[in-house]
Length: 144
Image 1: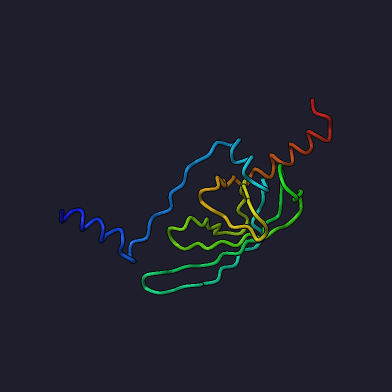
Image 2: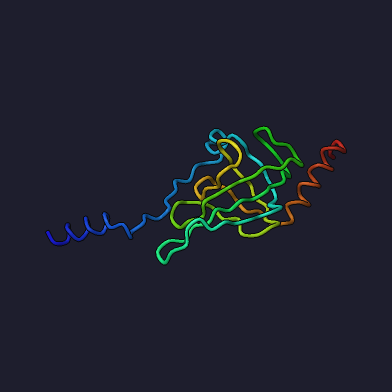
């Protein structure tokens, strides 16, 4: 009985925050669910502290993205858009952390988009720019 009471107290305690938990979807499901799917480069990042106490630190991260390749949505190569994400612990917000980061993004809703750890976003290597250029050159030459 004391173990049950201890578990109830543990789960109801305000200092206990549930960790982020994601269910990973296959690419087909992510494609169907997303409003926008792009490869984009973070061209500017700013953060604003929205809470800073001994028990809680939260930042709002704003990122300006430039589209390198688009598959779905209203954005095309060269377009820019903004994401704004609360990166507080345990609420699944994805922090980009550095300018120049290139990511495959599955976005839903309207701009500014929120980035979630659970959406299936993937950081890509910087040499993906060369692969995209080769893809473009190959397409414009008719391929061989």
